[in-house]
Length: 427
Image (cartoon, rainbow, N blue to C red; front, side, top):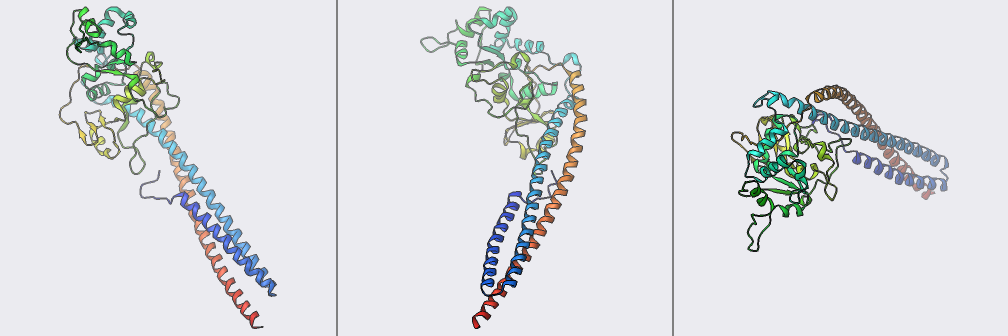
């Protein structure tokens, strides 16, 4: 888009001016025609004919100029639509590149061997041995795939921490801290029937320690202490919008934040819900109503949470943040007006990291080349828009001048007709 100090008049208003003016021309032309007929009836045939010809020529000129204005307005609309689409594409590429470059920020340990893996995430969960998540992981570790066929656990998809992956250690730390350990350890069920199977009650309304997860814990020599969170996918309100086209991960097509000048805030990397990678084994999962994990589980956990490169960039983008934000250097905004300050909390259960760095590097190199080409196309479109706007302004100026000529002509014709009628009356 153009700089913020370069304002354009609205196209609908410009078109309305042309249509309104053309209507007034038709009315004025009818008046001129009436004058001409009066002249014919009074013997002023040559004068009336001259008035009619001049009126028709002026009207034709105005119509031609009006059509030119409409053509330039349509061209401007088309060019601006093309530029807006190009802006969105460039922004998507910037987000993709930003996620890659975010891995260069300081982390606790840059050694690849210490990056969070699925095995490490499972080990972290198992350390919470008295949690529901820890007991379910123990069951899976001892019984493998057979665990998923048990009546108690067949509706359980897994634990939040195991159902998504992220691109780098920074994202793993900040997302885990944002959600907190209790949510990272939350058990995810498909239906409410699955939720009810995890915990039953006796006739007195007390928890039955011999059934559900409590009974399972006792059978392996463990005890389930305190409360635990269970998320039921079929009871969540899913995302109802569109998805990013041709994206195997089915990322959500969320409206990107924009500054008043139309540009994306510097440092914006994307939405947290779209920066979670769902394993191929879970991509095919859908609820009874047809929704996947991203539009149910992760959308309800993160909603429109924005991710920025630095805390300073996040704070500068405050007018664009409506539902919270985090930054890779530890900044956190929970919601509008609610800030998390102080030292970072090291949550001991984190999302595992994807292991596709080489493929990502090749993909990002290609993205950088494409973005250079896209920016060149954007510059060319901006020049085309400036040129088309100049042509539109010239056409409007010529239209106004011609309109003034026509109004002046009508005034002169009316004066002539009045004088001629007066003279005819005297005769």
